[in-house]
Image (cartoon, rainbow, N blue to C red):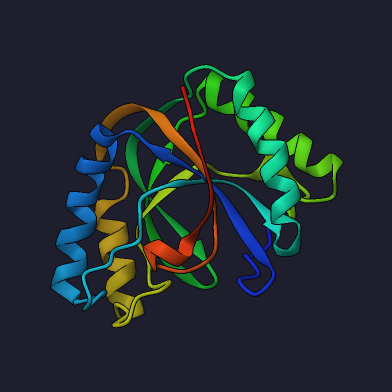
Length: 191
């Protein structure tokens, strides 16, 4: 089982999907967020796919590795087809399940292996990693959705189909914050 993130000591390695996918998924995020006033300042969590977590004080070393790794790969296809309900830290989250396309799998496994070899990745059992795009969660929400209502929304949406695909546009290292200026430590454009 994958351990919960350690927000004090870890950074996140994320893929940013193309606009077509993000625009559609963000509509659902916005409707629920506005209804519950989750983010009064209107800064919503940026939709992304976390592909790894790294030791915070090894971010500089990770940057160098990633700068080389991204050159080795062409287009990384992102495909989603349904909403799902997953439980993290005793709370449900509404996510879009990300299909393990060949390009996504090869890229993420190669990156993970490079980071593991250097003692940078904090994920020990990567074969259990589940790619997803979190749509609704109480993490970072200023006005969290009551747990029973979040569970209800989640279970209502679970299994609803919404097939979308797009190429990943960027690979980034993030701090765990909503602040768009503070969040991005490094960014790499993808083909």
